[in-house]
Amino acid sequence: MARLRQFRFAAFAAVCLLASALFACVSPDESAEQHGGGGESRRDAAPTQEPRSIDFYRNTLRQVPLRLMDAEQDLSRSISVREDDAYMTELHYRDDSDVRDLYAIFSNHHIYRLNALDFTLDWTADLEHQPVDPPSAYADRIAFHLEGPRVKTFLREGQPTGQQLINQRFIYETPTSPILATTLGFFFGVAQNFRVYAWLDRNTQGPQWFWQGKKRGARVAAPLFADDNQVYFYSESGHFLSVDARTGDRNWQYPFDDGTQIRLLAPAALKYNMFWFGDVTGSLYVMDKSSRVHFQFPAGEPIVSSPFIQDYYVLFQTPTQMHCIRPAWVDMGEGERVLRPAERGEDVAEPKWSLPLVSDETYRAFRNGRMSREELMASEERRDIRPLMKGNTWMYMLETTPEGRKYIFRVDADSGQPDTERDSETGEEHVRRFDVTAFPFVLANNDPDNRVIYFGTHEGYIFAMRE
Picture (tube, rainbow, N blue to C red):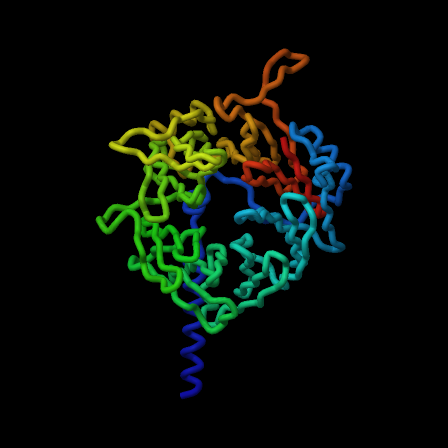
């Protein structure tokens, strides 16, 4: 009988592993839909080049039409957190209220927290395990989802709050969306059984509650959003949902229980206390935390990227174009604005400009049905561009070529006209592009008062530049 029980347990474990592998498999088409128009990964492979000096990187950045922070602001120093026999594998920016952090993670699992405003190194710690997702910041804490699966949390000042080991009976349910820390605990989505789990701090015995969709195959898509009352997420059943953060009970879902669905091809964004997301029909939705949709903007093609929102400009991608729109806002005084809701079907978003991502011939082939969306998204011809930062007058973009080279260029924020220069020999005008291939990590903050682009290297050098 004991042998029979052992055999049954071994068989059950094998089935769970097989199921995990099957559910973890994502087809290239599905992956392209989920991640939209590409964009740079913040986790980088091992360096293939010899270490370079800090002066090499400084000289490379002198070509970029931004200025390296000067010493009077205590921001011009590049911070070197280089370690022997280790290299930087990740660089992340996180902001919450008045706190803005940079997190540099190394191949030996050491993490460095830098203040993103004064560029000082605040603290360092050993994560002990490989991170699986970007860190999640909320209020006074930062949380890391690690291999194991484990969760390690720190106070913003650097003191560890204790490491949580997810109970072994959930070992086959590998989380697929980042851990989201709140004052209540932390939450994450799980692919294998399509659930959202909630754990409390220092609780290693199992989840406080979990949510599971009624429709089989309704996976929870990253990211999750939360406050102290609700957890918000998109389910691949075709609904955006809110559940009670303390109990897991459903508060609302959009669309409502009328049989209609929305299908997202890229994660939603949270900005100005609103959710921004585009769907496969080409509609950009703006929805508040009570599920009220303030307006829908028709893009004409499926929206394949998360919206980028800064200074009330909104950028998003379809398969063939990057669009910029300017929603209508009501000025409430003292710098506060409220999105004006649409009434009677009126337009409350002004199209500003669009940037072509493919040639005219490819555009016609796609619009005429001779090329599918999946074929177009996988095509090397399609430009891989993502917005970095809106400056005072310029919108800064990062373009990655199929060969892996990276260039920064900029366009006028109001007209979309690129910054050009005239060739001294031929007299022809061309777009000014600045080669930043040497930097595996290029990211920016979205703080309207401190517009900064950060450049990181495998050696551990981090530079900050602004207009």
